[in-house]
Image (cartoon, rainbow, N blue to C red; front, side):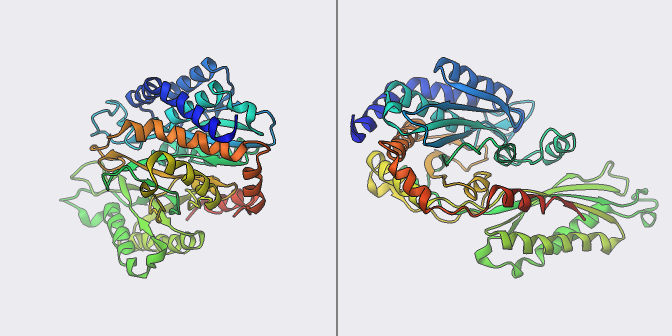
Length: 438
């Protein structure tokens, strides 16, 4: 088969398995799990790999599952990524009543799409025409939540980094992969199911802050106490006072939550804890804004005579989509969605650990407008199953065929023009530079 015949065949296979693909996504949707705890979801992936007779490794970064499909040659390897975890949104109608986990970020659709790509490549016979392997990779813990819990895993030696792809990079699970593809659902603001090509995004540093004061009776002897909650609020206000010094082009964000604010209403709070991110668009902006924010947080403690311990943790790096792969993806998306519905992306102030991967290999992370309601909100709902499950799988399968067909010339050309932003060693060194207490 020539390339276009092969693309047509994989699309037909995906369409023929439409109900099965949607059922996979819905099954995961009904049993949401938080990062590094995705045991049920990982088991579903393993079952599907066994049904497809795909060899796989499991237990990677605790719950990751990595399957490999061999091509006629194994010159290069293209990975298709799907994330196992949910986010915390207890108010969502499909949230787990015990954990508050809910798939209102679309990761369940990612896993279904990855499985659909595998089904299509195998049942169409496409791998006989491809000069490389395809890895189907279900990765854990993209949502950087439950920081205290994950930091405990780190202290226990179970993980080193708090994000799934970070940990997989450290463990070498991406060492045998040359490039990576991933889709992400987003809110349909246009009513036209637009595909936004991946662009750039913020990175961030994780932050845990512990203010220590002195307890006293809040009414009878407040002067004998040191109010750690006041210290925390002054620290937050100190960050607010610096916002005008943050450059617009750096997209700096600081959005803390207080995870412990005191024990009793009639006791001066002596133990107050916060979690937050410090986000920015570049590595330099991350470093600069982190220094300013730490300074303000310390000042809050100084103002009332409290103590403060600030723990900075490696967060995620800014996303850098590979423009050459973007163009290959774009040409296939235009066939399925129409040219007018495939547009260039803009900078995203949010973050993803796919950004980390994009620093060491060519990577894309396009956005598909397939849901109503904001991401991570109780209103989130898939509005168009074609755009959430079927068309993304077809587009990715066709993109893989373009990359690896024949002797894999397109993949080779992309790799020959690619210079990593960081080597793996430089990447690890950069992450470790933020593992500090102050």
